[in-house]
Image 1 (cartoon, rainbow, N blue to C red):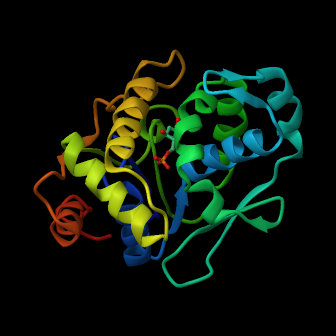
Image 2: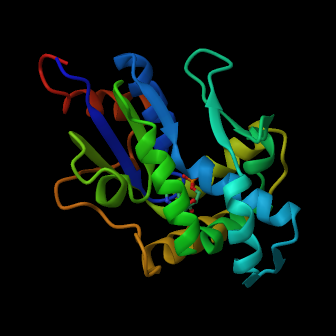
Amino acid sequence: MQKMIIAIDGLAATGKSTQAKRLATYLKYRYIDSGAMYRAVTWFALQNNCCASPKQCDVNALIAHLPALQITFKTIEKGSSTLFLNGENREKEIRGMEVSQWVSTVAAIPEVRTFLVDQQRSMVQMQGIVMDGRDIGTVVFPNADLKFFFTAQPKVRAQRRYDELRAAGQNPEYKVVLQNVTERDRLDSTRAIAPLVKAPDAIEIDVSDLDLEATFQRLLTHLPKNH
Ligand code: DC
């Protein structure tokens, strides 16, 4: 059977990446975390003082740097995907709270989106792909073979992200995480370009009451019979 393009979009911290990774491993497809790419550009902007205050980003300075940014993914452990920016492993840096607080601002810049969407599209080539993000089923691959849209209650999502950050050795305040998750959704859904919105043909899954296994089993029920 021809290999598919599978898009998993949805609200922040609904477990899209975990499920996308698992589905890609199951199907022996490539997994791409498009959010990591927006996070990498944001981390770069912060490092290079393109972002000066919590509401301001020097858009022109950032745009001037974009052509020099090389984003790649490597599989270091089986089933994982590690982001490299200009040859350096930046997986840890891009997951911090500072990047989370800035990423929606940077992701709303049209030139940043064009730059990353071009790269995302070029990653398909011949092999099957599972890509997660916010606009994969609407903008990056509107003709994707299978589209999912994940939602969940804000408290469930904040707890998930809080637990992930703690497991990664960080010590965030729960209320800051909750505020970040809901504020990102607000910014991502209301931006002018490629807002976070369910594609009309996406399958919506509310994961509030589903654990990881139940969510994965739900995804499998939607795969074509002869996958
Ligand atoms: O998936 P994530 O939470 O790591 O994504 C971080 C941010 O990147 C998210 O708040 C919005 C932005 N993003 C986007 O605008 N478009 C995508 N396809 C993926 C992420």
